[in-house]
Length: 86
Image 1 (cartoon, rainbow, N blue to C red):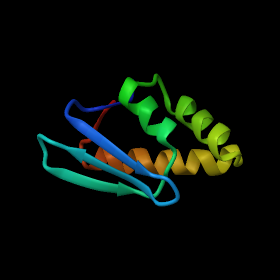
Image 2 (cartoon, helix red, strand yellow):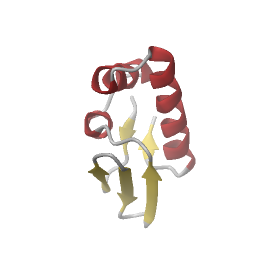
Image 3 (cartoon, helix red, strand yellow):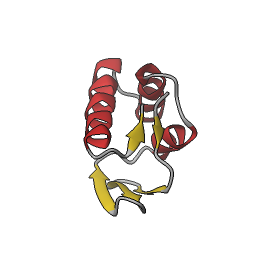
Image 4 (cartoon, rainbow, N blue to C red):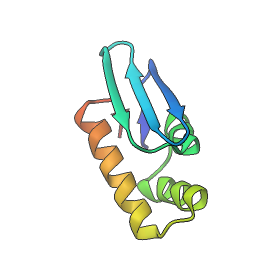
């Protein structure tokens, strides 16, 4: 399951992106995706990347290929900073 670690807070700014902050790690990360439902899904937990890809496709009306690229890049950044559990 993919899920934010506890004590992780997100703030989405439409048209700008999302800031992610973990209180324990004192880590702030900016992600240039302003799809609040994407980060809500990560907060709740999802079984796999395809669920997140579907959220992006539905919200942004983009191709599945572009959505998968956005999901992969975002998850890689979050995993590198230990902001999500997998």
